[in-house]
Image (cartoon, rainbow, N blue to C red; front, side):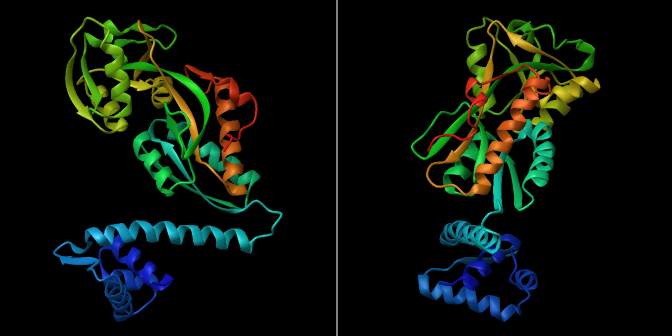
Length: 318
């Protein structure tokens, strides 16, 4: 098993075609086919099935592709770090970002990292907290924003802030961010909610369990963007963290207000794997913590309360 074989397997899995993979790798098609066949012979199992949709990995192929991606990623990081000046902070850093905060965080973080650490190449993946934690455990991201998580045996967690959940409605509802509304008012409306099992839905169900109003769930979705679009189209109200709707309220696209009775919040944390971390990962973690602190202090992160630990070191203990 060598790097050429692993690269070929990953390329075919990603594009679903030996011909297209060969083009991307600047090889002839028989060379890619040979690399895959050699691996299949060595492992004693087929790695791909030919279907009308193209080359589809078998179960064994899926497992190999996952390991191969991580191995190739680590080698690419090592190459970037070793080639640079030893005194320079450099390398590839893959950051996981919650969908609900990406509009608030990503562009200013990229700007800050590019300015302060030009040797660092950022890769940014967005998903929900559960997926991001899995990617962090699997080594597919180097650090990630998560919510409502404490230290685990494999992850060190830096608490960043607590933010309120807001009721979100069409502009005609005239909700005011400076005036909290009770859950009873929200639950009297048809609701557009995240699907069951989603982290935000867990918070919503927990909060409404103590309110003697049976809500009408009009629609469910796993997309924050769709939640807002469906509210705007008049299908009901929804619940979102403040960071996910602040810009829409300022622009007048939606109206929103913090929820109370009971007050409901979520905790945003930064998760990193325990053990040795590259200087580039530590630099991005510190930059992210500084950015979050600045947003909260300036009021740029609505209804957020900075965690006391953020005033100290930006590095979680391993």
